[in-house]
Length: 140
Image 1 (cartoon, rainbow, N blue to C red):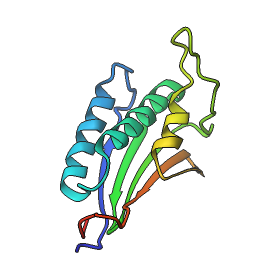
Image 2 (image 1 turned 90 degrees about the horizontal axis):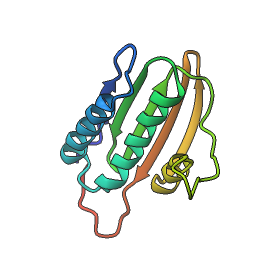
Image 3 (image 1 turned 135 degrees about the vertical axis):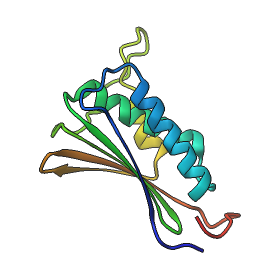
């Protein structure tokens, strides 16, 4: 079992164009990382969280974002840093017209724990999953 954490960092371009290319790179890096270091993690759930965190960073900030993926022996941490000091805000979902409001609720539902931390240069949103003991293979 490898108890040392592994870290992968995916970064936006200086001025992300919002064309989805940053999100695609983040999803690709996340998939490769999970397959190698955390095969126990729910890939679909983690990819949804990563996609939402990237989309929020692109949509609600005017600068850079940086994705960190860390795997411990029994944990997976997805941490998104961005240039905005404003924390995510849960909005009432728009059920009738495509106005959004689902993402932050989804992140909080899919991750085991979600924390928002202020940073000197912006903020960090951290989603953590802990491997369940039932039927899980050893090692991450």
